Length: 220
Image (cartoon, rainbow, N blue to C red; front, side, top):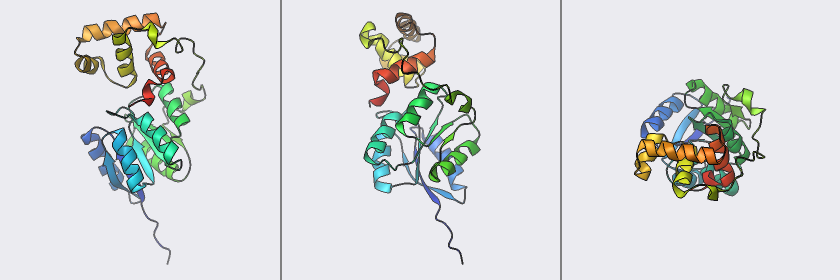
């Protein structure tokens, strides 16, 4: 009699409780996988990954404290065999390329169908790689580390402008940034516009590239 394979052991890392609850219901409904732990930030994800040794970690990017990118890099450095699937609302190719460079095995958007995540988990566990079908067309374009706009020094910005760009790149909305920095939304928008003008940026993708090259997204 053939022995039944053990279900894939999944660790969920997301700072929103409702998101984790929904993911747990989705994963636990599958016969070949089960949730063995949850984490609400990058630090907890790193610790639980080391304690529980899951088959796959489903990791959000924007979390308080250590973010998902920093947690991914920390785990890949200490446990190179760790299998990580990024689940995020960020569809920017700069995020995708940087996470792929960090060693993730999957990248799925939260707005996509639940089957995308399940496919990614199974592919990653089998040693493969899975990228959300809505993003695959842009992967071949690559991430340009030679973008001169992104290489301009952070010293070109005021302290507030840099803080606003850092939070934008980390996934916060203007309203959330205003609350965190005790500013009005209009002031946040003004700092963003001034910073983008100084760095000759044309959109959010440039802000993310700039943040990556400054190392902002590597830090807790």
